[in-house]
Amino acid sequence: MSLSIGDKAPAFSGIDQDGNKISLKNFKGKKVILFFYPKDDTTGCTAEACNLNDNRKALMKKGFIIAGVSADDSKSHKKFADKYDLDFSLIADTEKKMIEDYGVWGEKMLYGKKYMGIIRTTFVIDEKGKIEKIFNQVDTKNHTEQIMESYKQ
Image (cartoon, rainbow, N blue to C red; front, side):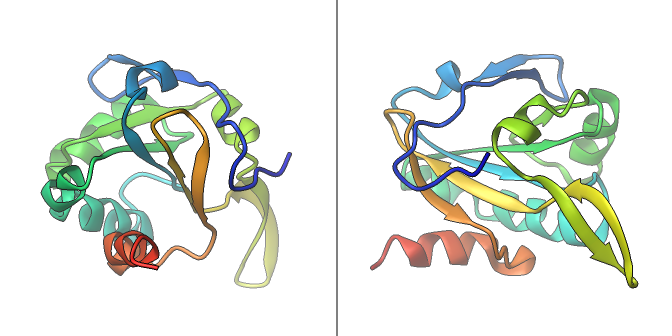
C-alpha cells in the first residue's frame, strides 16, 4: 500500500522504549513527525535520530511532536535512546504492522545484494490525522532542516 499526501494516516498503536503505549490518538491536535528507520544504533539511523533530537526544541516551537519507529524491540530502543539521550518515543514494531501499514517495507540493496527491509521514510501527520508531507529521500544528518525547509514554501 502506498500512502500519499492528503491520505488519512493509518491508525497505530505500539509500545515505546519506556513501556508506554503510544497510538496515533495520543497526537490528536498536534503535528507528528513519524520517522521510520531501519535499525537502532547504526550510523545513518543514529545521525537521523540525533539530528531530530538536537533540534527538538525548535521543532516543538513549531508545534511538532517526534516519534520514531523500527522493527527493533523496546529493549533495543531503550539502549539506543539512553546512549544518545533521545527525548522522544521510539515505537517497537516487531510484528511490522505499522511498517506494513505505512508501506515502508520493501526491497533494498546493499553491496549488490537485494534484501527486504525498512525503507527510511518520514511522514508528517497533521493535527487532524492526515498525511501532510512524506520524505522518501531522508538527509539523515540534516533531517530537521529538510523538514523545516519544506514548510517555508
